[in-house]
Image (cartoon, rainbow, N blue to C red; front, side, top):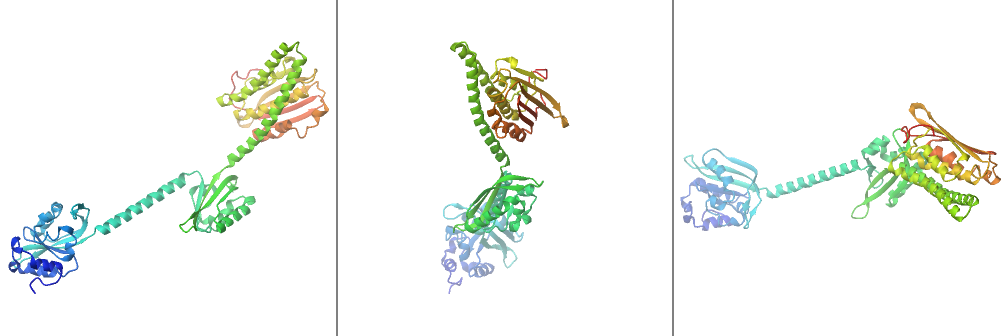
Amino acid sequence: MEWPFGNDEMAHRIRSHDWGATPLGPPQGWPSPLRAAVDLMLPAATPIGLYWGHDFALLYNDAWRRLIGDKHPAALGRPAREVFPEVWGEIEPMLAAVLAGHGASRTQDQRLPLNRGGRIEEAWFSFSFDPIRLADGAIGGILNIASETTGRLLTERRREEAERALRESEERQRLMVELVPAMLWWCGPQGDNITINHRWRSYTGQDNADVQNYGWLDAIHPDDAAATHAAFLHAFATGEAVERQQRIRRTDGKYRWHLVRHIPMRGEDGAVSRWFGAVIDIQDLRELQERQQVLVGELQHRTRNLMAVICAIAARTLESSADLADFGARFGGRLAALTRVQGLLSRLAEGRRISFDELIRIELAALDDDGGRVTLEGPRGVALRSSTVQTFALALHELATNAVKYGAFAQARGRLAIRWRVEWRAKGQPWLHVDWRESGVVMPAEAAAPQGSGSGRALIERVLPYQLGAETTFAMGPDGVHCTMALPVSERQAAGGLGQA
């Protein structure tokens, strides 16, 4: 068999190539180190190429030709600068240094974008340039052992990008979890391996170890714990979500109401893979709803009383009116005064302070044109807290309504004395003391009947202490109503100072 020996493609091509038209010339004249390198190169499974002479004419094996794509077979025997113009600037200095006797060169994961298939492809290679010496010791060529690392590097890059994206996603999730104003947790399909966020730890004082094996139930109010435990057992058995309200203990020992939601996360097969839970503090909302219910009830009662007051005003005005025109004028004026009471309450949104004397004068102005029935005595400008005006006005209205129906405004000899003063208690907190006393009244039987259950009395004796922290008394005596109310007021003064009313 003609040299070079072998049945592989490159052995056949080297044997049949027109070497006389190349810088290398016919193989018969090739130096023995070159022929030995070809014999070493051709049967190797590793990609090996040869750059020979100062033109770096190319020879290579089957494995190396697969690295250069469609540059083969035209690359065989041609100068390297013609075969690799796109990367010649990178490899020529390395080849020249080896040929000049500066030693072998090795490179790991070198980026060499090659023109393969008619377009530049991003490619990376690990390779070595090793000198081949002639008999006289001069370097005649360079042996190139190479492997393409593009696939590995791209795979590693994609993995790194995926890992980075995962880390960023986990960080975003962590930040979201930390920023959400709720206590959160995750757990396995049966409530195992619970993980809690910092809000649960800071609120309850429990850490991850404490909440395992239903240890989190220790933070639940004893009255809620059994039902809560049953709800979660049912969820783990059925995969149904949990939504309930329960009290959870704070680190200071106080319990607050929370809304608890616990939902399943399912895999592609529909089975529960994890549970996600969130707890939101609703204590303030529940208190607001309770206050709202009280106010709605009082509003309904106030509306009924308001109609009764209007009817009483109409009757009294009719009795003292000379004719219909006189009735219309006087009745309209009293209705306007009554409307001003409502207008006073509606101004709360403007942020101004309402004084007690302003409130009581406007309330009484709607009920009595005869100033001789009422005695007012107390300082001007005692500013009421904005949060107390609505409820306090309802209490005064109840007293005034009772006076119109049965008391000082219903009987000719009836009189009403309202006296108030300010007391400074501990820590400089001002309290308003109001004394409402009727006299000259003969109370009818129907007025005495609802003493224990009347909504007006309930407002004064129960709602004011509960909502405003007030101290109250209410007595329905034979001479009329005697009521006292004491409540904290604003430290600032209303317009007009604290002069005498």
